[in-house]
Length: 440
Image (cartoon, rainbow, N blue to C red; front, side):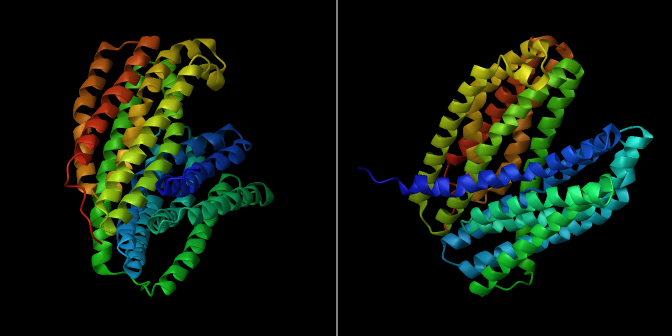
């Protein structure tokens, strides 16, 4: 009987708990929506506006985890455990500083931000209440990102899973207590989530405090370390901005095509995002293992991790693609119960299915280069990927194809042109030697 490959075991050991933690994150807003929904349509609409703002801010700040993981993993691989923990702690201080600024600025700007949506006075009031309170949870959310990145770099994805799970449970309980037990309405939902978020920070503080004592690492910020985290994080922030720009531009064109087409795009993108959770978990495993291998000076091992995770990403993409293709005729019915929507969205879902192997490899390559600390290239590549994509979107907007054909062309633009551009820029990079810089 053959012995299981230890590399496969390491990938699974990191990826499976990471997947659980990733799934727990969006559950916060889902619980809020379920509980607030029973208060009525107006509070739920207000939550929709506030949630969109919060998700945008949080999505842009996720670089705190992505920048911290490789910095910690590289030192961990080099056997510099004290330096690894200290690098993560510097990331925590950066998160706290950014979070404090965002909380203060966001709290003051809440009325102006909400007014941009042009909602009714009643909905605007509910959105302002929720968003104004939730802004004070932003520092906690950002600290959780950085703390998660620290532990991932130390090759630990189990602890973040436990803390995310406990945070989700606390969020659900506190929301119910504050909304219905104390009668605070939508304010109770926001307050419950903020308390749960700071509770997660407390749990991470205990865990990281133990790590710091074990490895004799200072808990105080180091100016050069915080500056380095900010430098790397800045490039990854720009990379995230380019991704958000691509998504928003696609939604804008879908809106121009028509209401049915916009609804169809939402179905296709929801399926794409669901598959991305599993691929993100694989990318996180790649980040941690690549950073560790480079720190240990194991270039051959790093190349092996690259080949193995890319293969896993491609095969997972094939499996997901087959599932999406097999269910493409009924997915519209599952989401809407409308046969006409099902017919409208099926061609776009087939495009998504064909593109899944490409998507699988792209997500993994993204994680590989993040693990290597190649943040500057990722930012530049992100801007370059928009060069072929934006003209195609403009052409679709001008030609204005509608119905199933219009939606299929939009899907081909995003899942084809944009994702292929990402594959080419990332694939070109990993075939060159520059990204493999060994040492702690």
